[in-house]
Length: 509
Image 1 (cartoon, one colour):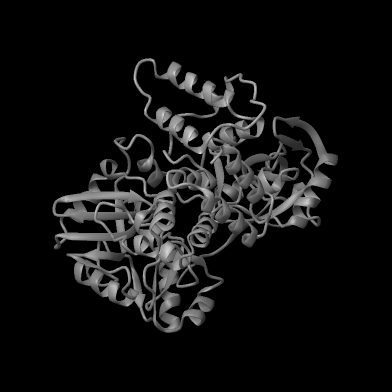
Image 2: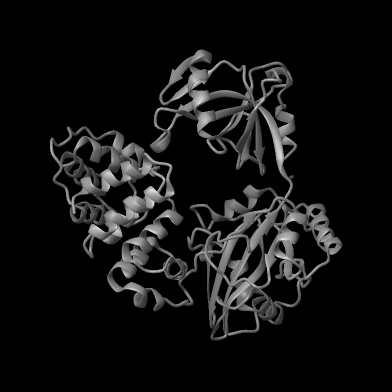
């Protein structure tokens, strides 16, 4: 298979909004791939090299000066072999060797292939082949049930391996996947709940209502005295969290797989700023920092018994036997089983009063399933909104090519200075809004800087966000968390926008 075929599929996927068309294009490519080509092709179409991070970024690639090849000739196997070589190059002389490999690769690539490789290696390959779409495409390409693909992916943890199993071994290969202690499981995720009342009404009385912490997701595996810890993205952090390791090593069991969250608490038991927790998950995992407190809310395996397919009620019974009931300290996530509406509201009030985000409402009948599947888990938390000034926008990628998309957001300086930048967002924008921005912003432009169009501070936009965090990236020392556009506010002037003080008030001190 030629690289150009993968590039053409990537372009086709990025050019359509139709999930059905994306899935069909991806499935066609995977069907045409040979057994050794499935893994790299799947990884690339999902937006990353099969090898993961290979130490090649913008700085390395910006210095390459190679004319494109006139015709496509690179094969998937050749490119994957070069990426293997790049990933395995280290030590004295590695910089020069990497450069040689990249020059050779890019010299053999056409202009479109060079663009694709550049975006692939810098993490900018935004083509719309998200995880869920890829799983559907794998199922369609292999003609196997999507449920079998999703389950195998949950247990294997990697899309390329799941694709190869499906396309070379079918249902039998997918069903042979098993939970293995020491290999992390893809986490089950929650969908947003409109409100506590709505979540309770939708799921009925057989629910668990638990605290939703502003922490970091962790998965912990224990086999005898060996304990290992992973993040939500399945990055291992065992060496950086010895306190969590010791907590789990002390439990009265021989083997266990636990799902939970961890965060740094102050002396009063209230959560410290989110960055204090995340600082322990940085690249230097041995760096000192605030002690982390784990709170576990699920158990996927206990002393030789896999519990993934058991209903949550059964898993929580097993968790209670290991850690104690929902109110047990210090390792059990606070919450209540089968609460009345008043009792559920009290759990939410308690969570907010303790400085946490809100609550999780979970169906006690649900098995454990990776990703967001339906509404079995719902997160309910207050929504913050801010009126901010639009300072600029960036030209989009993929489906948004030709549109001014990622907007720069500023808070009002109460002292009358220029608005103070506090973040960017491309989320929440309809096609109509993108078209309006693209037509309107050039008339407000004051300069162009690279891929960005900087604007006169005249527009106000209403933003929903999950909170704020300290950040040295922006001049105000604060950044928005998970910001998304709700609507523009033509009824407001920049003088009526929220101030930097209002944004800073969302920090959790």
